[in-house]
Image 1 (cartoon, helix red, strand yellow):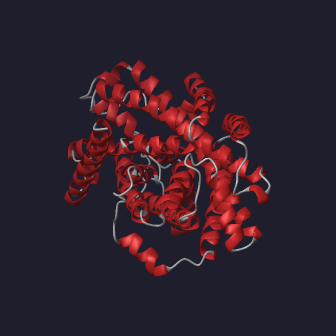
Image 2 (cartoon, one colour):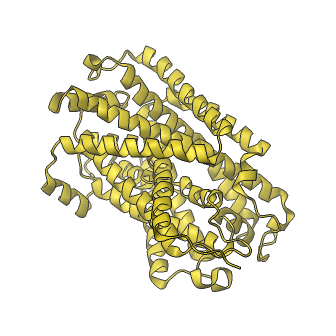
Length: 445
């Protein structure tokens, strides 16, 4: 007999906590770095891309979760069973490249914020000597990474969620407060939000726009919500009613409202702050500007909020991404995954069992160490490359949602509405066009 649905109050509390968990994992390193770098370079011009990116990620993630609610399978399970072995191979290749990129991006961001925090406030504007800072940043990035991996392995989901919740609340409050203290021009902000413009006069303007749009709110990390739903006991199971649409839509609304607000705040505090070409002194420069214009405490408020954001992102990515590798390997071993006409998988993969597997642990160790090589590279280049690479998952997800969620035979009442399908087609075409245009520009050089 189906269990009694939870009360409205419990739904709100649970949605706030799980929504913040999704926001922290998606925001983190990419949003902190990309929003700040584009703010420094273009002011508030690309603020619309933050809101647009958050909205698109909401629609995509809602579709991913709707599949899981309808079938009891994660979207990755469904794609491998319904779209055939090619889907698994393509995603595995992309995931390998993306994982190195996200690891390098988050480690670089953690190292950048931490190095700014240990630099005396009087030296924020100038930064540390290049050779010394590179060694220090590699050690800081690895230190954060090893600590995050240790916490993920030693603690359970409940402890992980509590730590993430605290970090997320602190990061949002501190950065939004810092942005408010700058007293931005609301008229200028409104224009930047509602009038889309691309800095075409800048040789890298399109690159940065694509990177910001693709990086804000997470990329592959959108899949994390489905696994955490299982941890919360909110996936459809035998004799248990699936969660209502209001429940997961509330979670995702919380996640992407927080994401957009945080990205906007970062844009405001970093607008037109001069930084080095490599972006290595980004966090020191923003802190120095806040210290000069508001007061000594403002720089530390910003750095504390930025640190909470990037480390929360690292924890979320380190906890979740190895599950994808564990599930992909398990699905590859499962001969039934090769039958694209099979309605249900013979082996439902629970996130708890995945996190205890040898593949999960090996993937976590690799993620926590190998991408440290990327900390040596130009900071702005690493962040921009990750944003562009992350944006490539958007057309893949949009196409998969069109193919899978439009079949009533597969998802029943949870099938896409015609408006959703039109939106997904638009997102697919625009994202493909953006990537193609940028590659054509690069080849023309």
